[in-house]
Length: 296
Image (tube, rainbow, N blue to C red; front, side, top):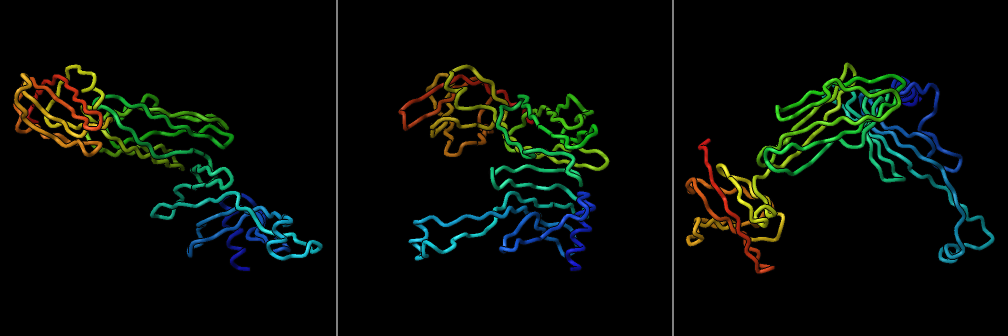
């Protein structure tokens, strides 16, 4: 009884649900409505929502289980419609609520103690050429009857924010967009949207390359500075560097990995030819390359 009172009191604070009942079962032993699990400190860990259902066994099922046709074969069970997992910060303040729709296999996230904001994704990944601007769009839903204001905070100067004072009208969806300048190799970034009561962290994993298979296949002249990142988008196995006369092979690099850092420390500035070799199609593709190392 004491545990039930704690649950009702806590959930009333969180959602204003008053005297609604929890962890209840039907007379047929089915879970119904909200079922709640708590941490030892009384914080909500998990909420699940069940709907009781029943059905009669089919004739084939009765035969298989050797049940007489004239016997009541009604079976009672419940369907789990959705699950909400509560995630907390180190100080036990609510971070977010992860909701899993078990019927449609959809995941959404709530932010704010009263689920003020809904979004479907907080992690983003992209691959792009170094120096290019990559646009990321985030859709946020305001579940309240008032305007919500959020201020973006970024972890890198590579972010380009066009609307630093972001707001979401009452009961509307709005897209927050920003650009990120692509840096070489693997990089991780965080952008935080927050106000006095809500903090939403978005995580971006980016990979930047200088040269890709497609560029070499086009055969157009490219300029490379220092060591560079090669992005294999085809089936080539090797990258070879030749002098400008295509007579001397200066370096051979394995392209067994999709993304490879190529060391040019023993190659002087100047004009060369890069060649990618595809053994499966028995092809070689060349492109002219100007190496301009700046010794940084």
